[in-house]
Every structure is written in structure tokens, then in C-alpha cells.
Length: 197
Image (cartoon, rainbow, N blue to C red; front, side):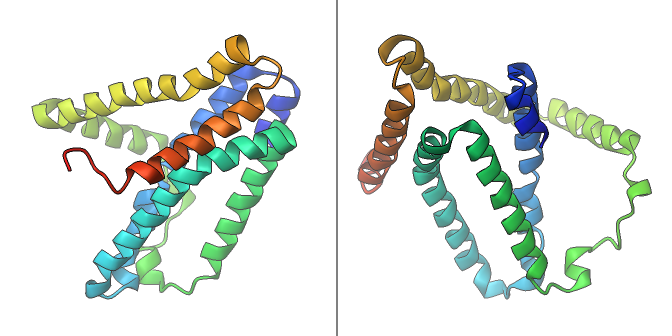
């Protein structure tokens, strides 16, 4: 709702701040998803489940950007945000329908809101940061991921801005959708031939 309100009020900095918070929270989904797998699956199913998960992630990477761009051009930003919200709601309902034992869902016992103190969270981050700073290999890896994240983010929006402000100001949405679709097609075509083969 906040994202829709920020879009309607044309508050672009607030939109970016809300999208940042949304993506930051979404990063916790992967560990939360993989944690209960050990209690749900048999040990011999781990590799198969991991492969299936990676395959689905790859398919979303290939087609998600194109579908998102097409959705944006078809229903606009508000429609895309609403579809995104409905998708999150359906996902939450499907997860809620799963019958998972309490010991698997809460291995450390039931969580209470009063246990979630901001000071404890900041202390965990401080300890994690100290650990990273003490180990040079880990520091190099994290620094590389941060640098790659900034570069990747810049290159991800560069084609959109180039089309909007230079190449096709009147119909950049259509060409942005086509760009994303052909990028996915290029990934599909190039996938069977990895580098060095």
C-alpha cells in the first residue's frame, strides 16, 4: 500500500527506499526456505531438491525480467505493484497450507515479539561485521559482491534509461520489454555452450 501511495504521489525517492526495503527483506527468504528442508525431506532428496530449486530460479531469471517489463507496459506501474502484492499473498497462503511439524518450523522454540529487540539485531550485525573484517578472504568476497552489486544494478538500468532518454522516448516501454525478452532468449541459446567448451 505504501508503494502504491508513493507511486500515486510521484515521490520517486520514497519509491526507491520502499523497493530497497522490500528487496532487503526478500533476501531473508532463501535462508528461511532452505532451513526447514532438512526436517521435511529425506537425506537422499537434498541434492534433487537443490537442483530443482536452482532450475526454477534459473527459469525465473530468464523469463521474469521480460514478463515484468511486459506487465509494466500492459498495466502500468500500479498494476505491476498490485500483481506483485497478490503474488506475495498467494505465496504466503500456499506456504501456510503446508503441514510442517512445529519442531521443524521453530527449532529454537516459539518466537515472541518481545524477544526481537533492535539492540540484539544490531549486536548480531556488529559481530558479523567484525568476523568479516578479521578474515581477509571473506572480506575480499563480500567486497567483490558489493562492487558487483553496484555494477550490476547500474548496467541493469542503463538500457532502460538509454531507451527512455535517447533512443525511443515515446515507446521505450515496448522496446524495454523486447530487450528483456531477447536477453532471456540469448541466455537460453548460450546455456548449452559454457565458456571454454
